[in-house]
Amino acid sequence: MPAGLLVRLRPAGPWRIGPATGARNRADAIYHSDTLYAAITCAMRDLGFLEPWLRETAEAPSSAVRFTSCYPFQRKTLFVVPPKSLWPPLPSARLRYRGARFVAMPFLEALLGDEPIDETRWLVDGASECLMPSDRNEGPFRTTVRTSAAVDRLNPAAVEPHHAAGIEFSPGCGLWFMATFADDDARRRWVDPVCAALTLLADTGFGGKRTSGWGACERPEFFDGDLKGMLPSARWDDAAEGERGWWLLSLFTPSEHDAVDWRRGHYGAVTRGGRMTTGQLKRSGTMVEEGSVLVCPEAPTGNARNVAPDGAPHPVYRAGFAVSIPIALRPTQVPS
Image (cartoon, rainbow, N blue to C red; front, side, top):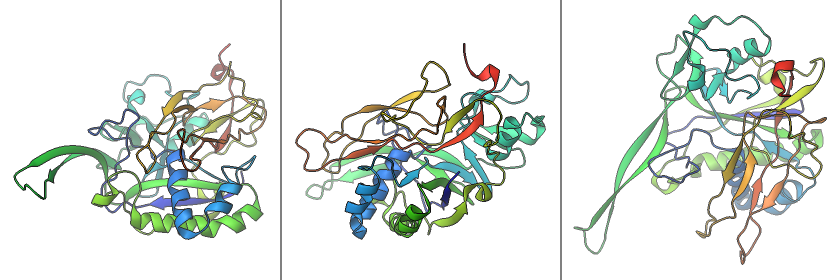
């Protein structure tokens, strides 16, 4: 696993992460990797790094920097979307595994290592869909709906109420993600600009309703170095004997060089759309979702596609760079 950067974001208020449907009374709990790349790219523009950033990421055969999606954390516990090849486990009389969208890293360590699970130590928080330690009083976040009202400045009696859903975090909780670099030279060139871009975004905000103060966070926490050392509770299965699968922690768009065996593995797809800052609709596209386990001889790389509508003044890239972890493919994991 290459050297990288683990980042923790501690929100200072609610976050608006729009769902795929665009419904204002719904909110997603994953800040996806393509959206994170877009936000960082806008910050790179403001910091004066846009041209070299695009040249070495979206326009390069293999991106110098890649990001996972953002997942919840609670105190020192990191949560992540589990690998589809292992989830859900066998039915339990105590735990409703199918109700968990996010799973604590220590639980996955035991699951990947075929260790016995003490189910009394775990519970599924229905509000956040997190499988977490049973000694916690509440989950990392809750989805709430806030009501606002637009007032006509020329006619104060004209009021238009509206609703917006967002996620609000418990004390000591937030979102984490990883940035990986192609090599040490790429890390030296880009670790400081990436940290600067994220520090800027902490002030200006992530996601929707930023003009209302949503999406802001405290100064990001950066942990730089070997990713295995930064995540001691995760079982990195590099030494697994036999065939390996690649567990995606990011959204993924396959490149022409990715030799994925689509007849095998465990994967799902999502449709991604969105709008430009001008309000124009981007071209929608299908991406492989987080938690998918792909079968291919080498780690998937992915690419970025220009999704700008016809007549747009500049390209708009949707990043589908893969960040994946190798895990052993057991006989029961690969369908015949």
